[in-house]
Length: 78
Image (cartoon, rainbow, N blue to C red):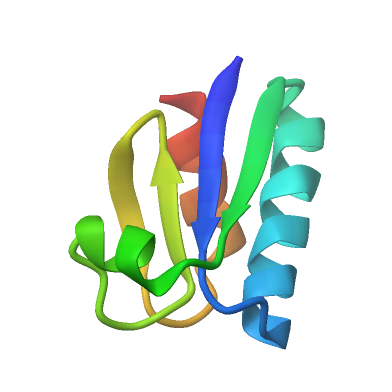
């Protein structure tokens, strides 16, 4: 199971990122545990200045704007 954190305020882009991760995980058959992190101090602790941010298994893989579906699939498959 992959641990996924979506870092952001809960804006539409953050929600879209979470939805994209769920969709790609379902396509790949990868089980995920997704968590939304909205606390700015916690987000800053990851070194992210622009949101949404995406952390998979403790590693920051994306920050700022919507990630591409093919990138999310690659990150989840790794």
